[in-house]
Amino acid sequence: MSVADTHAALPDVRGTYREGADLSRTTWFGTGGRADVLFRPADEDDLVHFMATRPAGLAVTVLGVGSNVLVRDRGIAGVTIRLGRGFTSIAVEGHEVHAGAAALDGHVARQAAAAGIAGLEFLAGVPGTIGGAIAMNAGAYGREIADVLVRVRAVAPDGTAHDLDAEVLGHGYRHCELAGEWVFTSCVLRGEAGVKPAIEERIREIQDCRALTQPTKERTGGSTFRNPPPPQARAWELIDRAGCRGLRRGGAMVSEKHCNFLVNTGGASATDLETLAEDVRRRVWNSQGICLEWEIRCLGRHPGGAR
Image (cartoon, rainbow, N blue to C red; front, top):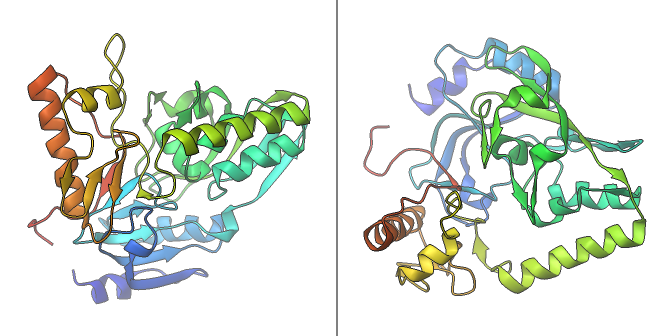
């Protein structure tokens, strides 16, 4: 089905459709192809209507702010859903924070701090949105979203909306069983009573640590690979031992500052970045017998594959 045919078959919505949207403008890497159709729902009801009435077999991909993804150069088939302003609310009730899936993790951490809620400071060290954090059980500095998640609101592939307790999501290390065509729209996070100045100081410490140890000023996509289970070394140590620090492919480079980050030094294609990452995986395997698993999500058509 052509892009025009796909668009013509889509249900009427209150949000917006956009054909051929350039996703390189969205991803933190600054690379990638186009979405056949980009859908920005007006609110949850609009999303529910779309999911329930979309054409059978239509491919659907959910994209946040593009912080931990690599969109391939040939783009994403079908419809790419990106949640916007209708999903960015943040509200505090007692020691709980109610957050829309498109709310930025750092904003949630700061709102919690302003309300004297401790336990969510780690979100200041997690790039991206709350929805993305739920979908990959994102974490940093000793905590992960599953540690503070109470329940989520989500739209199923058949277009039905559900309130789900956190326990049913199947969270593991950088993994969520329900991630995929389920679209998380909001959640409830639980913290604890804290002292506002101490909470704010912890957020500053996290932000300072990120700036010191990670290439936060460059075009990157967060941690490339998951850390292997103990007693194996961390991913960055394995990569460094394999001699990959500073390794390049076109405009893509393994960060000199943190080996588990890839950097677009200027003009890198998504293929450059993916090929470089696979070279790193191969070198780590050949030198140490450990298979690194992707943490960044690679989305879209494979180079040279069928449309």
